[in-house]
View 1 (cartoon, helix red, strand yellow):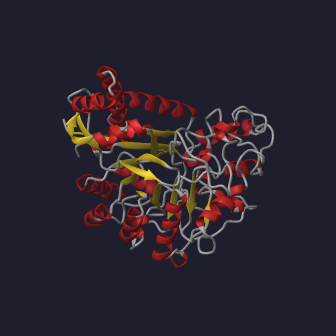
View 2 (cartoon, each protein chain N blue to C red):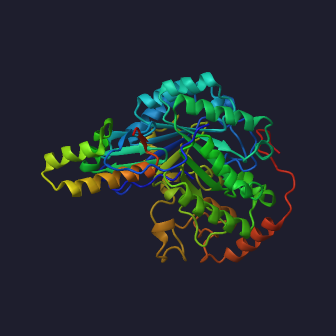
View 3 (tube, rainbow over the protein chains, first blue to last red):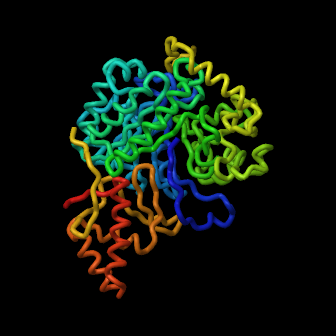
Length: 379
Length: 100
């Protein structure tokens, strides 16, 4: 979901690997541990425990390999990255390598002292998640009482430390109608930027479709709210917006194209082209414990599986949009079409689009039941 | 809580510097200069790099323009237009701290 603008000019990739450009961004999922239990968590259904996590030294080696490979942005994420006791040390090591360090956090697990330590360590930016515009909504969605109050305090500490702040607002059926209040809150908290992302239906969110899927009317209202806010808040708040996937005409350019811009390193060291890639059963993933990161990026089977367009079928293969949206999301094609190389069923040209629309309308109209919260324990 | 509530309008008197969280660095792997900001990486050409370096939080846009006009021997009005447009763009993206 990270939207890194393409560089305007790039030089050729190393000689032995024609056409594959170096990656721009690395998402380091430092841990799957998290005090919150958001029902749309992008982590896999089977979560990695503490004992399998990469050590401090292993993560620092990964960061060094990433910097040498051409990574510019390092996203420190999870789970909740503050659950790692070595977060300050990891941040310091990454900053010393010249990486742009971005902490993606729920705020829970941070203290005023720790925020100052992160600032001193060279942290460039904080992305703080907000699950709603008030404590009732936010704590209901996050499944953690007191979370909202803590987030308000964290935003204040971040501002006082002078670190720029982005508010991350994941939107869905139950909180979308609070978007204007979320925008106001972001401005009041001193955020320079907000990411408004409509829930994507993979993994945990797929289990909560009826509780999360917005209606067509909500989607249209949200589009209008965002357009108006971009005008009203120009130069005050930068707005990045991920519209509702299943209500769009064409699929999203997932990850900016498979193996084109970024990569994810899981808590266990597995390297994935996107956070949901492990839902594609035919793929085998390399691990940073066993193979250098550059080798994985340029020569790993999982990264080469859907690079370029040779893997595409019709209607993608002859489509004039194939270099715009890259056929959409491979994981969604796997989940809904049963074939990771199929056209993303979101696409208006997919034979499965009517089925997707009917399901979205039905789930949108459903009365939300109880959430299936994310948990480490199998359900 | 004290967020900015109105957009900055850049003119000749503006004094600005890169905001915290925005930095220019050498991207050795791609052989270019990049301006890094939250979720953004912009490859800058030589002129843009010069402007970014000139945004030192001390000199005004007018002073920067004068210096460029002398250095390049180009019409001052044209340079002023280019510099203000670029700096306004950076400001709208919340990449600058406006000091006055």
